[in-house]
Length: 111
Image (cartoon, rainbow, N blue to C red):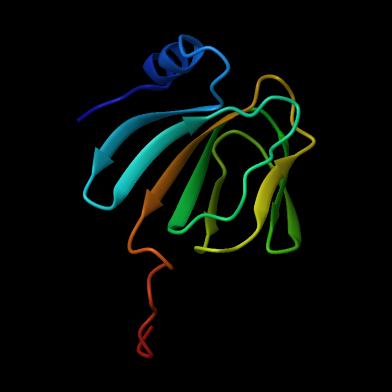
Protein backbone atom coordinates (compact mmCIF):
# COMPACT_ATOMS: atom_id res chain seq x y z
CA UNK A 1 0.00 0.00 0.00
CA UNK A 2 1.26 3.43 -0.89
CA UNK A 3 -0.02 6.97 -1.22
CA UNK A 4 1.62 10.33 -1.78
CA UNK A 5 0.57 13.84 -0.87
CA UNK A 6 0.11 14.74 -4.53
CA UNK A 7 -2.00 11.65 -5.30
CA UNK A 8 -4.15 12.16 -2.21
CA UNK A 9 -4.72 15.86 -2.93
CA UNK A 10 -5.70 15.05 -6.54
CA UNK A 11 -8.22 12.45 -5.35
CA UNK A 12 -9.59 14.86 -2.76
CA UNK A 13 -9.92 17.65 -5.35
CA UNK A 14 -11.68 15.25 -7.71
CA UNK A 15 -14.29 14.53 -5.06
CA UNK A 16 -16.27 17.82 -5.26
CA UNK A 17 -16.93 19.42 -1.90
CA UNK A 18 -15.19 16.69 0.12
CA UNK A 19 -13.06 17.76 3.08
CA UNK A 20 -11.35 14.39 3.51
CA UNK A 21 -10.48 11.35 1.44
CA UNK A 22 -9.52 7.85 2.62
CA UNK A 23 -6.15 6.84 1.18
CA UNK A 24 -5.10 3.70 3.14
CA UNK A 25 -6.84 1.18 5.36
CA UNK A 26 -5.63 -1.93 7.17
CA UNK A 27 -7.26 -3.55 10.21
CA UNK A 28 -8.16 -0.79 12.68
CA UNK A 29 -5.84 1.72 10.93
CA UNK A 30 -7.29 4.30 8.54
CA UNK A 31 -5.32 7.10 6.85
CA UNK A 32 -7.12 10.09 5.37
CA UNK A 33 -6.07 13.38 3.88
CA UNK A 34 -8.03 16.21 5.47
CA UNK A 35 -8.39 19.75 4.14
CA UNK A 36 -11.08 21.82 5.84
CA UNK A 37 -12.29 25.01 4.19
CA UNK A 38 -12.57 28.18 6.31
CA UNK A 39 -13.60 26.34 9.49
CA UNK A 40 -12.86 22.94 11.03
CA UNK A 41 -16.19 21.56 12.25
CA UNK A 42 -15.12 18.04 13.15
CA UNK A 43 -16.39 16.38 16.30
CA UNK A 44 -14.57 13.95 18.64
CA UNK A 45 -13.78 10.56 17.10
CA UNK A 46 -14.22 7.04 18.44
CA UNK A 47 -10.57 6.04 17.87
CA UNK A 48 -7.21 7.52 18.88
CA UNK A 49 -5.71 9.58 16.10
CA UNK A 50 -2.57 11.25 14.85
CA UNK A 51 -2.42 14.35 12.66
CA UNK A 52 0.69 14.98 10.57
CA UNK A 53 0.55 18.47 9.07
CA UNK A 54 1.39 18.42 5.37
CA UNK A 55 1.27 22.15 4.65
CA UNK A 56 0.01 25.40 6.09
CA UNK A 57 0.10 27.08 9.47
CA UNK A 58 -2.42 27.88 12.16
CA UNK A 59 -3.42 26.76 15.63
CA UNK A 60 -4.56 23.38 16.94
CA UNK A 61 -6.98 23.20 19.87
CA UNK A 62 -6.71 19.85 21.68
CA UNK A 63 -8.62 19.28 24.95
CA UNK A 64 -8.55 23.03 25.60
CA UNK A 65 -4.81 23.44 24.94
CA UNK A 66 -3.88 25.65 21.98
CA UNK A 67 -0.69 25.04 19.97
CA UNK A 68 0.65 26.75 16.85
CA UNK A 69 1.35 24.39 13.96
CA UNK A 70 3.32 24.30 10.73
CA UNK A 71 4.20 21.71 8.09
CA UNK A 72 5.83 18.65 9.63
CA UNK A 73 4.20 18.95 13.06
CA UNK A 74 2.42 15.94 14.55
CA UNK A 75 -0.40 15.86 17.10
CA UNK A 76 -1.93 13.01 19.09
CA UNK A 77 -5.62 13.13 20.06
CA UNK A 78 -7.08 10.45 22.34
CA UNK A 79 -10.46 9.02 21.37
CA UNK A 80 -13.41 11.16 22.46
CA UNK A 81 -11.44 14.40 23.00
CA UNK A 82 -12.67 17.67 21.50
CA UNK A 83 -10.17 19.12 19.02
CA UNK A 84 -9.99 21.28 15.91
CA UNK A 85 -7.74 23.35 13.69
CA UNK A 86 -8.17 27.13 13.82
CA UNK A 87 -6.75 30.23 12.11
CA UNK A 88 -5.48 28.28 9.09
CA UNK A 89 -5.28 29.41 5.47
CA UNK A 90 -6.40 27.86 2.19
CA UNK A 91 -3.06 26.06 1.88
CA UNK A 92 -3.67 23.86 4.97
CA UNK A 93 -3.80 20.06 4.63
CA UNK A 94 -3.01 17.23 7.03
CA UNK A 95 -2.80 13.47 7.19
CA UNK A 96 -5.17 11.92 9.75
CA UNK A 97 -4.33 8.46 11.07
CA UNK A 98 -7.05 6.68 13.05
CA UNK A 99 -6.09 3.47 14.85
CA UNK A 100 -6.93 1.11 17.67
CA UNK A 101 -10.18 0.07 19.30
CA UNK A 102 -13.27 2.26 19.67
CA UNK A 103 -12.84 4.25 22.87
CA UNK A 104 -9.07 4.42 22.42
CA UNK A 105 -6.23 2.28 23.62
CA UNK A 106 -6.03 1.46 27.32
CA UNK A 107 -2.67 2.28 28.86
CA UNK A 108 -1.16 -0.35 31.08
CA UNK A 109 -0.05 0.59 34.58
CA UNK A 110 3.53 -0.24 33.46
CA UNK A 111 3.63 2.60 30.88
